[in-house]
Length: 581
Image (cartoon, rainbow, N blue to C red):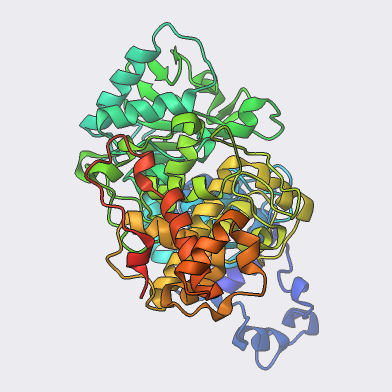
């Protein structure tokens, strides 16, 4: 009996539709009494590009063997039993028959529209792929930030890869007493030390809402990471950890993480909000380190954030979305993968993250360091750029500032048009963040204009956008030959401000000394009246040259990376005039 005949004859006993061709709108030959395929509709269907040829030898079909369950078949093929039941019309997954043909998910890329209550992990499991793969294909930085109506591009693994991954998953199912299979990544010595430090510090404390900060400190002090992790929301820690060599065991086939209690000591556990959660942690999530005696963040407990082990991965309004471990083989941490600005070697010495000094703006350290990591610019460079653009009150950056004479709003004073432009520029940091928040669609069009504009008052987004806008401008100036490849971080800050203040065209003109880009009235609008005469005299009455002299002095007075260093005595800050051509 052929595979197709077997499928047709076994339909009634395995719960499949007795007539699988009915959905195609084609008659079965038996209805005509032909008794043979010949030139029938069935033959035409089999020979067409969109045929049932996948049921032939070596196709994407599994024949049930004695003792197999639908769960094991799903695991062996990198999908879920729910998905197999859906595509095969199986009403009772416990009742499958030896010899039954189980159609497997197509490996070709597909799209999926997010429904209320969906999670990225559930979508990945249902489609035979991983959270990491979906996030990479769709530019998702925060895996728990998806929204109903969002369209996701999916791509299952190649059948051979699915089979290899599934064999490991099936082996784990067959031996549930073994939490982690041989070859699964394990925490290295630095991560074990981080667990001990976290537990010692948190002992006897109650939560103060600083779980992410305390975990960041433990990881940095132990040497598991070299810098203070970026970001504010604990639930978004995954990408930063992955950039620093951590592996998510939930994406590892042999790990068998059934609850937080299966995580090894030294693992960093990241939690998102379960559907329906509305408290403060629904916004920020939670993070903790697995220790000898339980879990530690800004408090220590024998219990995981989701409650008892019987709750599995979801409980008490939380869902475990990451179990991150860093093996010894991957330490020391690699520098984060990020777009590189001119002269953006890994920050060292005075430009190191630990030497960042923000004074009255210390509250923005996390956002500055995140912007540094994601743009490739030194944190002191980022701080100098943001300080020059920020609205201030007694030296403190104002997150909710609004200009009285323009649409400039927020900490970095983005105009409405510029903010929307950055949010819809494919690949920009603001574009990625706005998509994750549902403010911009996958087509890079604004989905929620009011929400997007209100996001200018989010200091983290404002700093990320300001730093990335500067990086983008510097990269454009470098491409046109106006910024040398070996420009120092101190020089980069000044080039960035020139582009911010003058625009790209004006920046090129200023650097080249071609001041024809200035509009009538620019000199008077920018240069204080008491200073105009001196600059005009020095320029021989040439207004363009006078403006160039004034803006040069202004930048030198206001853009200085050493103001954001613990010790910048040996750092050379070039005068703007030395950057001109």
